[in-house]
Image (cartoon, rainbow, N blue to C red; front, side, top):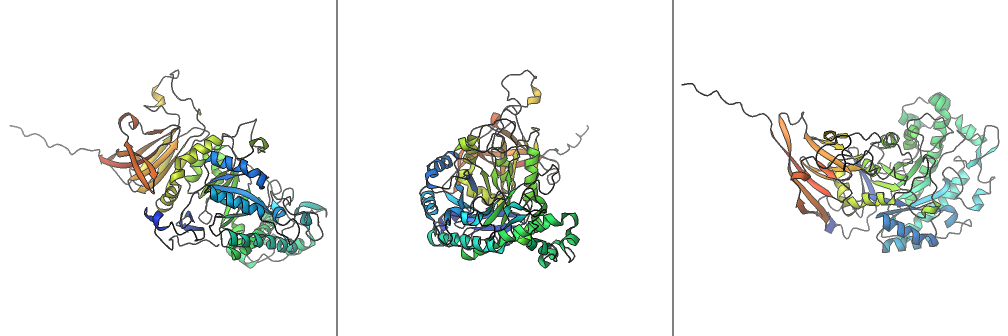
Length: 558
């Protein structure tokens, strides 16, 4: 895996004074670092948190860019994800056209927005729809997968060396163009393909694929997964065909990324059309062979040049959403939610995702809302909630690098409102935190009669959550929306102690430091810290006193 395990930057430390020292470091390549299960993404050699906006699929033309930039600005994003397709840059074999890319980067620079190109090549949502006509119409040279009955399937075969060589030529030409014309590193990362795999089929049944399936499992795969040497059926049993297809797609995408990184060593990822995390599905019912949760280990072996396997989450229920995060937030896999839905169930998950140490978060299809294709998980029409995402981005945008640094160095936690509206609890070391929802800012809902007026109604605010970062053992940075956070001492580390606020400072991040605004106390802190729709960030210092007084000695009798 082409990810550094040594997180220390080569120029300067993580300290708050790093901004000035790094102002001339723009020629340093973006890079992912991993340490102790935590990840951080460096851009210009300082922590960078991708607050993304992803366009609709057909926005990769100059005529669409005005709408794109309008939407990026409305969202308050610092990173744009936008397709760059094979059919677009090589419409005629061997003749390349990068005019859209050049215009895109020029306009991004004037707006101080970073770019993540989405390479739509041989596999886009498993299909060859973004390949040039000279590829998609030539089944002899670029064969499709074969069904068990011998008929062609819609998807191109990942076993085709001819296909791979043609796409590698285009992809490396794209990377060479970036290397020559993007010395500022406006492009900070590249997505390789899009939701690869195959629907309605478990594996290719062509003569070539059959011969490979009957051959022994590659030694590196058997070794890394602890399998005995043997053919695929012997090694994987009933899962053999799916694992075979997953390895084929992983090798295809991984070799493509490796070729691109030999030209320009930018971080690269590929995204997953999910297998449902909790419902039972059979291979062929989901994008089989893509980086679904059950084949991540195969992908890690087959595609070491891919830094991240990222989930595209269109599951609005909190149980499902959190299950996906659990599956993809691995020690060897930095978390990045590369796509998520935009209707009003989704903005809240910003807090959940960043609270798990993610390097980025991305609502999909933020431009041209009238052309939105709503995923089929939505029951009835629900409007996009771009304002909800924008409000959450605004909480941390000016301090995104600092939140990223603190999370990597000291730890970060986050909670989004769950569908059951229940409280969430976090162990912060010496302290415990409880995040709750729909409480009255002064007191507790349970104290009031059921017909009391003026209280928030349950689930009145869908966009609700809290983000916590540790500054040191007793100091925490906290922000949120429509939620309450309370702190208690940890009985295991602070027995016989009672927790108190030493100080609750409202702060703003300006010129690379946290500036004090005012002290909060009294009514505003008697019942925890209550976040509303206002943008507030607090630096909270916790302390304790002994809850048991010294026993008085008996008075002398006279």
